[in-house]
Image (cartoon, rainbow, N blue to C red; front, side, top):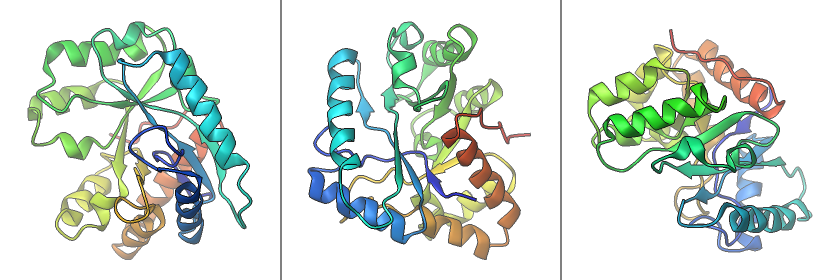
Length: 239
């Protein structure tokens, strides 16, 4: 199976990820060395910027890294990490912000207690607009919102993405493996931002899963990401 990174900030100069083309090249090489063959580049999109300007800048930055001459360079497709904002379901550019070639969209939830309005709006991305939300690094919100909010979010159609670091870090590994073992995660991504910290590390996370006896779960996650890359609808793995 292909190893597909579904969440990364490798585009140069567009957000708080890669600073320049040289950094992007190094990040792509680190990804390739870790076994990654395909990368979705998903820069942050905030409602303070116009969608048109963001899409222009994303296309320009994507063109830069696609032109890089690298041995074993991973395939590149675009997306966006769309920060929740009131009325997100009415955002006219949602289709262009989706993972390229899909109707799935990576959503970053608020960094505070979500409340019923945020949950309603995100659920309507699917029920009203027909796009399947991919909730970015759900594990990072555990201390910021209520358990009921997280449970409610998991109850409607969406995909849950976990960051590779949560699996690799010895402090959180046990919780991460438990969640994956019980089928609470649908996709993995590196959320890579650079080459010094928050690095491309997806291959290492899958090595931990295999070493922990979760080969079957790892294969399900690999298959789901491959479906996304191929423009097919990923499966909601949660029971």
